[in-house]
Length: 217
Image 1 (tube, rainbow, N blue to C red):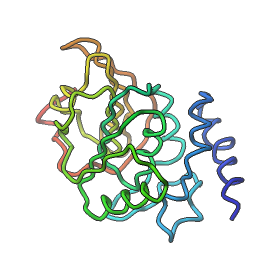
Image 2: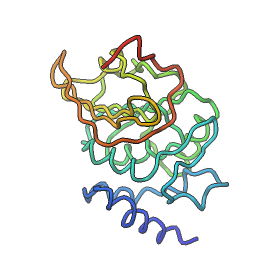
Image 3: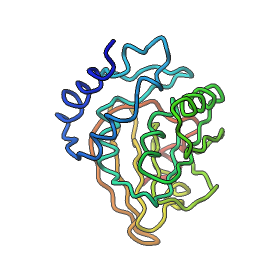
Image 4: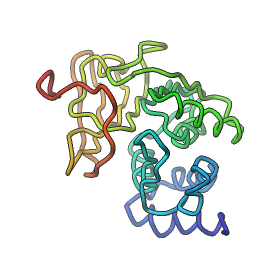
């Protein structure tokens, strides 16, 4: 398989037509080698418009979704980043290519090892992968400039919102199947947040999420 040709086709035929037009984002998706983060059994699907299974009931996000997240979250080198749900480690590698450090938390021990091995093999040194349950936040090094929640949330818990700096941005998938909102949340002051629904999609739920009847944002 010609990975470079497949990568080019992914960007030009899948991601760009989905209104991902930021050249920095497109260049990043051309640079970080997605195939290095895919389970060997699914290597030929590395650039397909599908959610690739990675074990433990989890999947990689579709490439078009990854592109839209990155475009919605213009990153600065100085940003402190929390990723909730490491998965394969690929999206952490994308975030790490644009920032000084990323803290990524994964609840499944098997995926912690998978992601850590992938990141080490790819030479990514500025991602800290930790095992734990971050569905309601992760206080280590909080507050953060950027929080990315890669699994679904019925609602966004206040404890997670509180870990955003003023001016900070969070990207989360909010709701339940058959439709979730891919939502950008910006903390504009100590007690005010702006929201923008970027697109509709469905992703697997995070484990141990807060129920809708407990809180609503």
